[in-house]
Amino acid sequence: MLNPSRPLKTFIADGEHIEAYPRSPSSRRPSITLEEKWWLPFPKVPANGLSEETRKRLQQCKECTHQIFKAAVAINSSVLSEMEVPQVYLESLPKSEKACLGDILYRYITADQFSPDCLLDYLDLSSEYSTLEIANRIEAAIHFWKMKYQKKKLNHAKTGSFWGSTVKGLGGDVEKSKLFAHRADTLLKNLKSHFPGLPQTALDMSKIQYNKDVGQSILESYSRVMESLAFNLMARIDDLLYVDDATKRRVVAESISILNHRGSMGSHDLHNQNSPSSFSNQSSYSSSLTGSPFRYSVPVTQRPQRLCRTTSHPAYGDSLDIEFENLTL
Image (cartoon, rainbow, N blue to C red):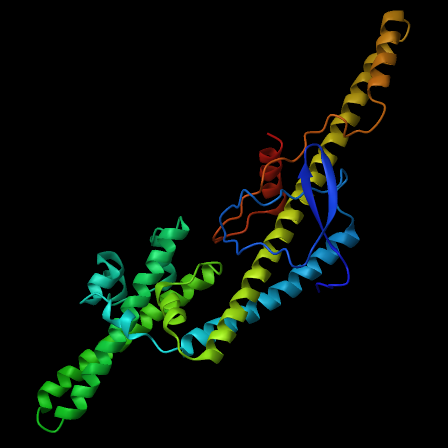
């Protein structure tokens, strides 16, 4: 997909011009999240937009990159799940599951009816910071419940022959802890699926820091770099296609406006064709329209926003109208 023998070209904004310059494959940017990165060069396209062949190649590159991204995420998640949870992390957990989650999360997870999607819609996920904080809380509660039912299961095995009725009660507590841990784990997976670009949680960073297996460390770091690179590449392709769509709609709108203006002026000139002054006005107007129809176009100079999570997809035409108006303000 990325041929090292061919120089990479990036279209960047440079005043009023569009420049293409060769870019070294080694000059890679750091990982970008779903938030805007103002220091990245703004994507620019030719006046008429990209050709269909170029768009097709970009779409193919995006699809290939997406497959690489999914594979890297899967490998990284698998390696992190196999790493041993550091004792330092377990000792830092709060003393109760309610302290881990907070009142709202604890009440919804331990309720009789549980729906992870409804709970995600209710939570404040407007920023990366708040989303990561919720993920850390859920992850801490998962391990707290796991330690709780493992400890009770161990006590059950030791005292089962002596405390029959008490053991039944302990067995019920173990099942509840398993159920709540499973609910929290489901909620965490749904959260990460909605926000694939979410940074690593406190548990992940703790595992990476205290891991002693060299093979796991190499595989985790390599997959993390591949994941970051693939995410960056997909984000830049999305930005370029976004600007191309807005540019083509601007071209169509300006062409229609010019044709309508010419038509209205032509009908006006038919009524005033015997007037010398009207003839001179017509000549001056015609001369003003010569040249490129994009002479008075407003360049696209605003970076498109990338949303963190989408629950519905509006109609293609309506969304581009809104985007086009924002870009030409």
